Image (cartoon, rainbow, N blue to C red; front, side):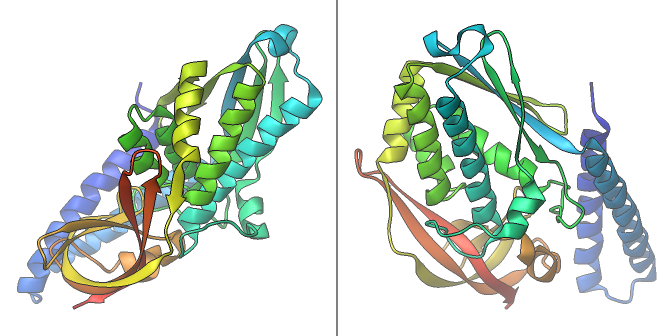
Length: 319
C-alpha cells in the first residue's frame, strides 16, 4: 500500500525533473516566456508539495525502532538493568553520531554533540515489551526547526537509514562503504553496541517502519555480530585533507549528496551537511560546470588493507 509520504515524494521527484528541464532550456533561451511561465508554475507546485509533505511528517510525530533480544538473559521480557541501559545508550549514541556527521561540515571523530541536535532528535526509551525482550526507542520524525532535503527526508530518517545500511551490508567491502556514510565515531559506537549484545550471549533483531511504509529489518545472529563487529573495530581513519575540484554536476541531492564528473574523468560523490543545502545545493542543476573544495577522509580496514575515500563538501560554486 502506497503511503501519502511515498506518494508526495514521488510527485516531488517528478516535479523536480520537469523543473530541471525548464531551467536548462532557460539557460539557452532566457527570454522564452512559455518556459518562464512553466518554471514559475512548477516552483509553486513544488513548494506546495514540500509544505504538504512536511505537514505529513510532522503529524507522524515519531519513528519507533524495536531492538528485540533473544537469549538466556532476555527471558520473560526482562533484562538486567545495566545491560538494558547500556544497549539503549549505545543505540542513542549511534544515531546521534550519525546525525552529527550528516549535519556538520567535517568528518567527526568524536567530541561533544550539540545540545540542539539532541533536542531535534529527541531520542527516548519508549517501551520495554515482554516475550523475547524488546527495547523500543523513539526519535522525532521531523522537528519544527529541522530541515528536509530536496526529496523530503528528515535528519532522523536519513540517519536511521544509514545505520540500517551498515547492519545489512553483506560483505566486508560493502560494510566499509556504508560505514563511510555514518562517520568514524558512529561506526565505533555501532561496533560497541553489537559487541555488548554479543558479550551478553544474546542475538538480536532490529526493526523500523519508515515514513514511506518500508519495513527495515536486520537479524543479528552471533555469527553476524562477530563479523560486523570485527570489521568495524578494524577501521582506521586517516587525517583529513582538503582537496580542490572542478567538473560538471552529474547527480543532485539524493540522500544528501551531489555527484560531480571531474575534469580528470573520475566521478566523485560528495556528501553535504544539511545546513549547506539551501545556500549551496539548491542553486545547482544537472550539467552545470562547478568548482569547489571538499574534505577527503580515507577509511582503511586494517585487517584486509581495503580503503575507501569519503568526500565531505566544504564549498561549491559555478565555475
